[in-house]
Structure formats: C-alpha cells, structure tokens
Image: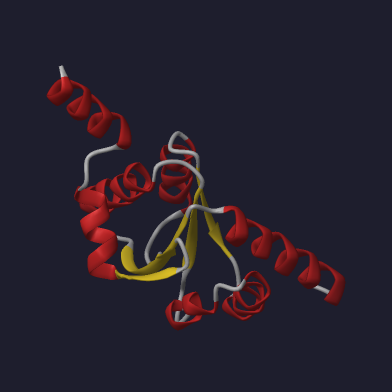
Length: 142
C-alpha cells in the first residue's frame, strides 16, 4: 500500500468514526473468511459495518476524528464495528456470533465520546432493542 492509499484509508476510517453512533473494538482471531462474511451480513441488517484496518492506520484515523480513547484497544488483531443504527442490536449480533462460534472477544468501544469497557459492551448486548423499549413504553402508557 503506497502513501496515497494509506492516506485515503485514514481519511475514510476517520469519517466512519465521526459518523458512527458507537464503535466497538473486537479481537477477530480465528475467524474464517466465511464466518466474517456471515457476520458482516448480520451486521449490515443492523446498519453496522465490520472492518479490519491496520492498527497504525486506525490510530492515525482516531487522532483525526477526535477518538483518541479508542487507541488503547488497538493491540493485536483488532476489527472495528461502526454502528450507525441501534447500538444494542449491533452488540447483540456480535454477542450471538460469539456464542455460536466461540470467537470474537470484545475489547471495548466508544459511544458518544465516552470509552466503553468490554463489560459495558456486553451489557449493551443484553439490552432490548430500541423498538422493544418503545413498545414497552407505549404499553405502560396505554
């Protein structure tokens, strides 16, 4: 990858960091290509993107996007999950994949400018989706 290509990747990842409602960092070790394709399909339904980028390029993108807090999770094989939809649905899809495959460990994340630990991402995965919460609220009001 030449310098121009690296600059383009940094700019693209920085843009995704700025636009995302949440970003989860996961360790994808052991995930096969077909498994990753299946996970990407599940996440696409949740308006989420799974992306593997070199850690050094991601660090530069995090600096550009003001997401320096993510840099602490960029050790070893790391994939970033850019959530543009419901953060709970995306975390649930990751947790379901992890349960089924035994792979994909949460490292942490970033949401609304705040750092998330792996335990907090797990807690988000256990939350009901936004639609379910709205339904409960309407039920309580009725």
